[in-house]
Image 1 (cartoon, rainbow, N blue to C red):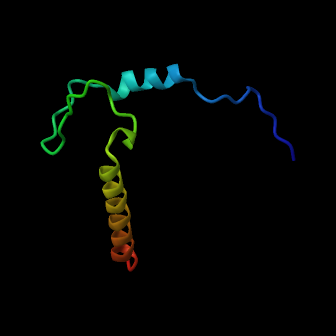
Image 2: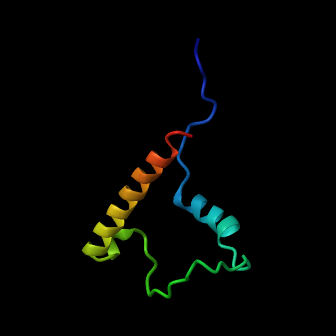
Length: 77
């Protein structure tokens, strides 16, 4: 049994993802959410490295505790 690839497999480039974002995600006319606060930052955040060390550690601990709690609560389901 053999398979033939008709076209070379390539990962989408940065421009393709940017186009998808512009077309489908970056909608300014979406309804606002009351629980979400838009931050007025000089530069957009890409990851948590811009946060302070204490904040990053507390965030990681919170993530682990919430995940473990959900595993315990949802295990019987």
